[in-house]
Image: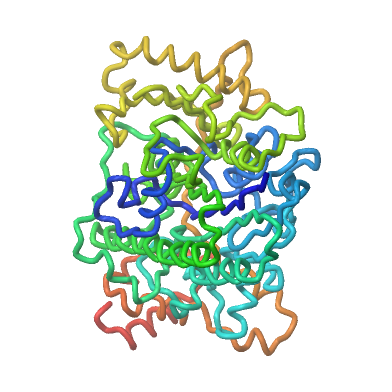
Length: 534
């Protein structure tokens, strides 16, 4: 029996409500729509831990953070997947697959292969240029460029446009390298290819050709909470620096445009598979590692138990095995990916570890509840979705939330704040279920005497994203450093066609005190060159 090819396509930080075929008519996603029409769309797909590195390690090994050790993002190589945890790439490689990863993986350590034969990597802020194939690609064409994927410091979530041409953008590069592999692969060996796009993760640095795609469209406005938020959600408000609604809505336009640009490049990959006659012999799974709050409930980024953060799009196309143009409302998550790939390849899981997920090609899992976790200690929270209700428990405080998503799909009203007596029975029911899940799948020591451990709430940490490029400090040759543009020049180039950005209204002092920018120099050149932005 011939084994199918497997094409795994991921975006980064893409919300569930961003595909036209899934009912969000303002979106322009013809190629994702094609996948939806030819496959099955999972309407309640979740990230088991809505942060980049944990989510991707759940995908790799099909196990939660208590097994792979990443309960949050760690960038210092202090955490690694234990060597006795098999990854889907390792298992499929052992079964005769050619395994290759292209684009953003976020493995730790960065170039650990995790079973892939080849890595062609593209990270947001690589520490060493020689570790990053996309950085090396840009070196030849843009030797002056420091900010490889848009300006990540003072403009992290601000409107901006790409510093490179459309054909050289990271989203284009992932498609090019994926297509190049497909054109040159051996004909008698099945492939497992992971194509990882960074977009729509901020910065929202879309090419100029896509920057106006959503301008003037009736795009959704952010939801507004009616009840108080957790300390973690309040902390996330500070990551973005939007002085007014106009700036936020423009950023939302560019977020959606970033997805549409990825969609175009996904279409090029599908076209190549079709031209080769391999499309219908390939299992294609599309999803994202987590979502983006994008101003909903007044907060931003991921890290949170709300749907914009932890609910993701997911589409599975596999002719003959998956019915076309279907929708599945069951709870599914990223833990189901490894079992699905192994099932399609007819390869057994080679460990005695119990997997929390199950193949999407079979009906062998109780999908009546969805468990999500994040972090440790006082910053840890866990969440359970059951039916139309969602119950969140924050260890710091502690704090509880209960939402009725049938009547309040945007999670604007914590029922335990507005009507606690009426919903106490539902609270206790979901609390018991969540304790059982946490006891089985959560971090060690979180459940004692069949109840949650509690911690005092933590102090809110004021934080704006402040990650300037890393690789320039590691360059060996002084002449290379001298070619690089100052960060101030890059910033001004990124916003030259975004008049909504007024530097005088942004918190530049934060970045100046951290020695990322020279505020006086930046504003001097901004006033000299762009008087409309005074």
